[in-house]
Amino acid sequence: MSAGSKEVETADAKLHVLQVEDNPLDVELVQRELRRAGFNFTSAVVQTKEDFTREVREHCPQLVLADYNLPQWRGMEALPILEEEGIDVPLILVTGALGEVTAVECLKQGATDYVLKGALARLPVSIHRALREKYLREQRKQAERELAQMVEELARSNEELERFAYVASHDLQEPLRMVASYTQLLGERYRGKLDENADKYIGYAVEGAQRMQTLIQDLLAFSRAGRNKPTGGDTDCNLLMKDVLLNLTASIQESGAVVTYDALPVVSTDRLQMSQLLQNLIGNAIKFRTQKPPAISVKAEEVNGFWQFGVSDDGIGIAPEHVDAIFSVFHRLHTRAEYSGNGIGLAICKKIVEHYGGKIWVESSPGQGSTFKFTLPARATQTKGASA
Ligand code: ADP
Image 1: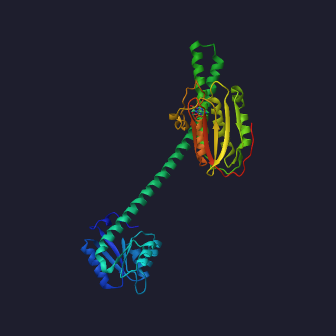
Image 2: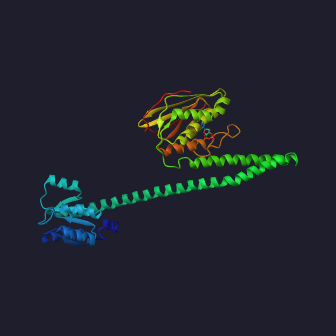
């Protein structure tokens, strides 16, 4: 790649031109035209493939001006050599009469332009354009390289951050366990033996430590979600639903919820993550209910090569301005006194779904219930029917 690409677009910068030409008079005429146009250039002249290759390697040119026909070679054959050497140098054919069809063919094969020897006055314009195009090409490549680098850096810093969150939440568990169990012990041993305030304060400390424990466990679950490479395991969602509902037995019974599901697919998603996903969504559908026992349904259909799942409820619904934000960590719309939780469940769902190349979103309006939809690549082959 030429180092002086920036300068070569001006006529004052030194331009190294490689001329592929056997006729000394034509060499001279071309150089005169360049001088006349104010180019500050050096040049080398070659006539054979071997000399061309050597020149390219030794003095990487910024421009090749090639005759179409030479006694022992053809100017167009310089193109594959430039490509092999991995350098982006414009090649302009400077030839005698060249048929329209041949000219178009040459441009298709990669020549930048062609200028007839009888019309050399056009050469400077053609060179300026070729160098300008090359400059823009390099600018674009540079921008692409920078973008790729930024994406890589972002991925690395994301990974670092995730590792940090994982290590921090993992390592915090142990000291926190100490605080939680000793404050609990304090509470049990000294309740009623100190004054009333002491009982109250110990109570707050126990509660705070327990809350922090669930928070840390949720954070750990969040940083674990999607950590491993997507596995190719077949997970039958109909069977999985039985386990999910079993895990939710207490809240289903307490709320009187009716959960139905029908003909769910087999997906290539890790069983544990799929269960986490459905459990979080169905758990929320139960939690964010109205006064009446919730009716919840889980469905799936194939849309454009993806399974599109929908978990619908008839609960409190969500205002349009919150439908995106609820998928961020710690984003909650209610106090803990109104509805329990840490605001991590949906962030975990999003992480799992995106890990498999899918999307998650919600369609809802306040008081009208919500349908959480997510997609997963449909590599599964079967669809089974079941209902609970
Ligand atoms: P958490 O349930 O711990 O609050 P989530 O991340 O699971 O955390 O949910 C974030 C917020 O999104 C909830 O606090 C609630 O406001 C809203 N939300 C989630 N699911 C539903 C639902 N099915 N109906 C209404 N609101 C919901």
